[in-house]
Image 1 (tube, helix red, strand yellow):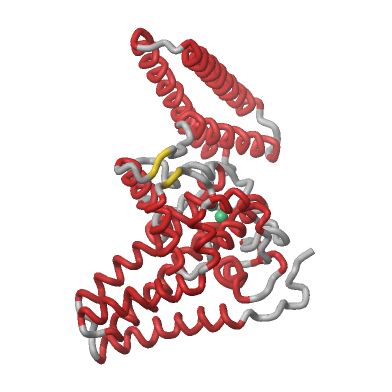
Image 2: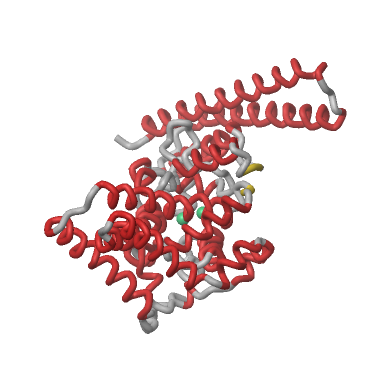
Length: 379
Ligand SMILES: [Zn+2]
Ligand SMILES: [Zn+2]
């Protein structure tokens, strides 16, 4: 059943907040720029505050609290809780309960709070301005977070913290520089609108626009352009496949400032237990998906024995890689149990080399399968 049969009532506070801040950013900010002008301190405040609020949502609300992708020192958690509140996207508990439901029921119109199947606008913002049953909160999936005193404190005092974090920094910079209107407009309102829509893009466009290298089982896409506007969250197909990885952009050069921040924090001792899916497992998922696609294509077209033979060979190669990987894993597990120390260093090194060789083999197979898809495509 779809819950907008009989449109639910408008939520006035949310509607007025989104509409008024958007109009001020659209009209008030350019008008002030032309009439009075913003000096460099206002722009610097805007950029730094944008970064602090945006990254608190992506590294804190999302990767730390929603997905437990790593563990963080209380000082870092406090930073995320304060600047995350400045983003005005609700408390950690409310945000995470909805996001975990999004992952669990992705694209299901009745249970995914921001299902893309209800339209781009609904997934972007519409879901927040009406009292849709699919968006109602149910905190049963965030029991683990209730053990974090910072999360509980932020939830209890969410309104005063949010008001303080939105007004105090711009007013302080305004007091120091002598132009509090400029800072309220730029650091306050324009910054809020930018971070709002940067996050909302992940629920809307990142489920519509881009490639699906890992699975077409859900609508999430990988898109490097969106990653640029979302602090690295644009690699959303990967994220939906491996949601506990602290990275979203897995190649070292993928634009993912959130993963760089988490990695940097780990060097400083502020973050630890960073979860990272092994390269082999990632390639395995990609090759399995490409084989599945080839299989589907073969089933759709009139069966062609030539392709069937090629595909059978590819399956054999895949199975052999998986078999070797299993043996390798078992060996290192046994060795770990026996606690080989210095003597096994060379063995461990050779196991790592073997693992990398297997990963490369799957990577080459992936290229072959992609080329095969082009050949199999109807002319
Ligand atoms: Zn998603
Ligand atoms: Zn997520």
